[in-house]
Amino acid sequence: MNNITKNQYEYALARIEELLPIVDDDTPTNDKNAVELSLMSDIVMEYEKEHYPIGKPTIAELIELSLSEMGITQKQLATEIGVSPSRINDYVSGRAEPTLKNAGLICKTLNIPAHLMLSV
Picture 1: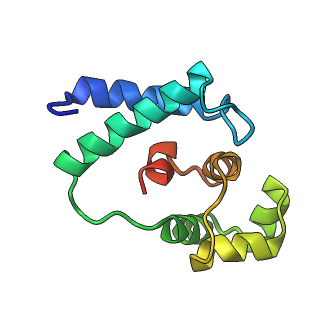
Picture 2: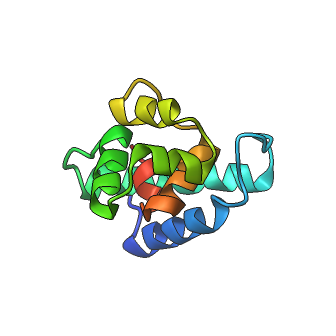
Picture 3: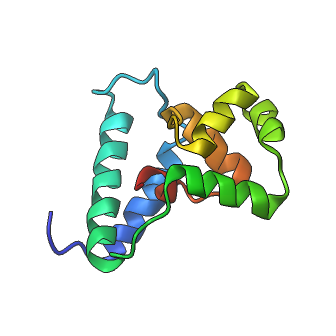
């Protein structure tokens, strides 16, 4: 995948935002939406690798920064997305990464652009 244009990249970002609410951990990997989400994610990652080579924040850093910016506690986020506070702490500390479903909920709750979470 070389020479991805900015228009292709922007289209892929928009499609990821549309597909994230549809695709979750229970979606079969051969489902057309799951396949498309994977392809769009690959396009975004390839483009960003070439055009934005600066080190990206980790998922833990994204969550921690967003919690701070929004003034939300880990416990509040846990309640909002339906997981235990210790699970959120695992994400923030880097001991675990959220499932695709939880990543989508975290993005929505904390206003994190989905492509940032997916391209980490």
